[in-house]
Amino acid sequence: MGRHTQDPKTIFSEVTADYQALFGEDLVGIILYGSAAGKDFQPGSSDINFMVVLTENGIEHIDRSFGAVAKWRKRGVALPLFLTEAYVKSSIDVFPIEYLGFQRNHVQVFGKEILDDLEFRPAFLRLQCEREIKGKLLLLREAFMESNGKGKALKVVIQEALPALIAIFEGLLHLKGIALRGTKREIIRAAAGAFAIEAGVFEGILDIREGRSALRDKGVVALFKGCLKEMQRLSSIIDSFS
Image 1 (cartoon, rainbow, N blue to C red):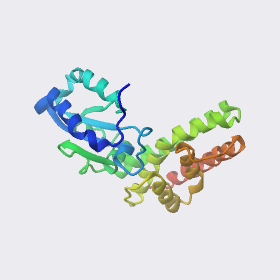
Image 2 (cartoon, rainbow, N blue to C red):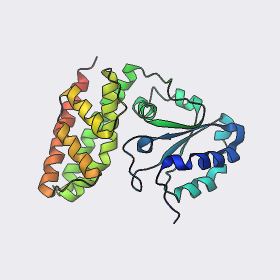
Image 3 (cartoon, rainbow, N blue to C red):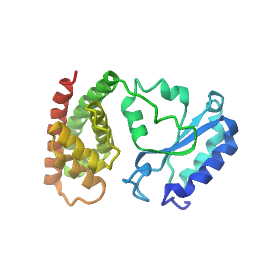
Image 4 (cartoon, rainbow, N blue to C red):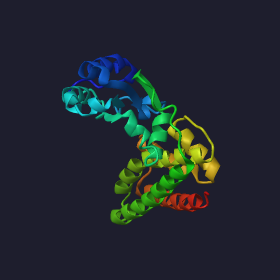
């Protein structure tokens, strides 16, 4: 197993050189996104995610990068997103939450900046927020029943659900005209202030994800039920959006 990267910035030049060697002029840009691009990065546990933007010709030959992908995965870098600029521009109506997240939390490593100028139509963003909230609520209820009330199982479920919940909060804040490029905890608190939901529930989930929680089974069950209650509240809130 190779050494894992502790600071994403230290590998920018090497990553760029590898993909330039593979794709040449077909390499449009490389973007770091996700927690590694912000204040929430935790070396050794946070994913390091790159977006590799290629021309239409380049995307037809992504098999050139098999070796580079394998090399970097040994050093703790996640499988990159390979896409084209045209694909991004044609996808923001379908995946506005995801691309809003990319836009708010990225570092341009190389080449053309394609995210900063993206504009999101409120109707599309609202629709995806509603779909994600109501879909996540059903999945969490199902997981709650399948757990038979066992805190260990529920702890896994809620900490894995947190990134999607944070993304939903970002989408809702954008709809309310609140621009925020903050930590996960700051986003939770901003959403709580804007929509009258209980910040403590989601901060409690974040504490579990970050290894700061000492909750036992009963506490985890109570936290999970609190999450269900707040997601139901959000489901009603999104219905009121015009």
